Image (cartoon, helix red, strand yellow):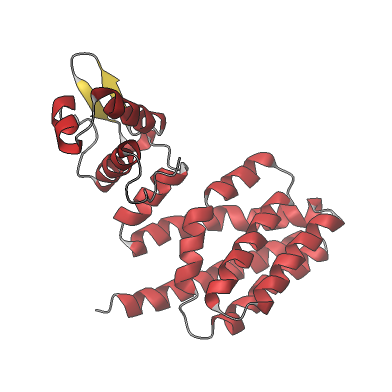
Length: 240
């Protein structure tokens, strides 16, 4: 079930999960703080206790809360949250200042992506390279920034898949949502295709040439360009 953006008239279960999740992640309900009493929440949402308890079980599965007999439902410490859960990531994106969230994402990408590109240069099959190149060509052919987002995501996903390391591929898949948001923001920079496409092509070329060092360097250059693009756009969106 999608708890990120419940549709109008969707089940109250999904709405409760989304609203309580947002309240927890935003800090409205702090770690080790009890959620309001069941009776209070049931009255607020006009639902039965079984519906509320099912929503609480979902939040518990995401590492956000735990239940204690004769105490109630308590918010877990932030270190125990399942931050790669797509819903938790979405709630973080919605409740964290963009500049702060993107700085966190940039740190993760800087650790992962250059090494993934280097690994892919040594492990990619010809078929893997073809998939990476096909995604790049779709980026190149895109007529608008909006059309370019999905091929860009596919490009990075294909490189991760080309490592043939299931754990790395899974981690990259879990980061697709914030990466999509990051690409959407950076694409607002003027002349994005002219600046971004050559850097992506350099990664592709290094992987095609089985050049691990070159792939790592090209990825670092592309990430530095992403940082500059984010700074440029965020400065426009939030002027001093």
